[in-house]
Image 1 (tube, rainbow, N blue to C red):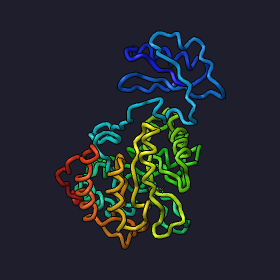
Image 2: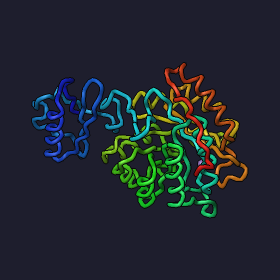
Image 3: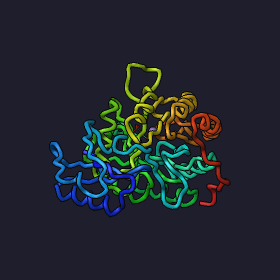
Image 4: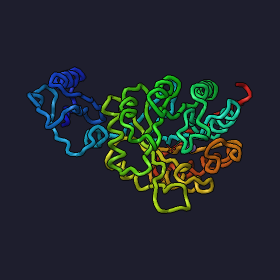
Length: 351
Ligand code: PEP
Ligand code: MN
């Protein structure tokens, strides 16, 4: 059920509606929009008993939401969600594209700072790097843990880059929430519902990567789990799915971008690094992702990919990141988007 408020409804009237919903034993999710505020209702086992909600001041109408996902849906919030960050002009989901780049994993302070210096110089506003790595083999590099998070936080202080890094369980999520700007939930955890609920109680935006075999509905329902706990700052990320094709690591499903945008107000990014697994495919598919309307990119970059502890084969050389940014800057205006100007360089030596 969705309570649509009148365009001129006051904040007090919205608050009163929320209070009424809670008194009926449900959960209220106010979603302010450009035209009007809607209040989503969740926590109902069956049909919501609306009581006298429709007679309350400021209420325009009550709408039954038939789709399984509610808070994720454009029915609830017609305007795109734009995520902002305190102390930064970086946004996700607005006119500017969100470019996130960095190594697969934080390996050493020197390695991470060297990559960050190039990411910053290229004009990306977000730095990625895993401190907790969900690896296929338990015998490969698992990440530096909290030490890696501290390195990432120092990178934010020096370069002003917003930090995105993965949480793999409730324990790491608590630390990632404390140190980072965006909590990444990886493909393997897309259906880890207890982790999704914990992320929904976090105070930082969450980027949810599509599971290896997730349908569109399963992907959106996973996002619904996060939002149902009250965290509405969710970013989706297409990172390739398993198919019979073996010339790439995964098959990047770019058609999900317009499919998501039709159904949901949430921003969607594309990860052409995990989506292809091969360095030479990353720039072409980045161009395609921007052309298809993605809100940004998540790209792996390493200064010495031959010696990377994970995902070297799909990591761009820093010069290639410059090339990618130059191409993205040219394509962006064609689809009504822009990329912020690259800032003055800061030397990594000053760390
Ligand atoms: C990553 O981004 O480092 C990662 C592990 O990606 P995914 O969860 O998509 O495999
Ligand atoms: Mn990786």
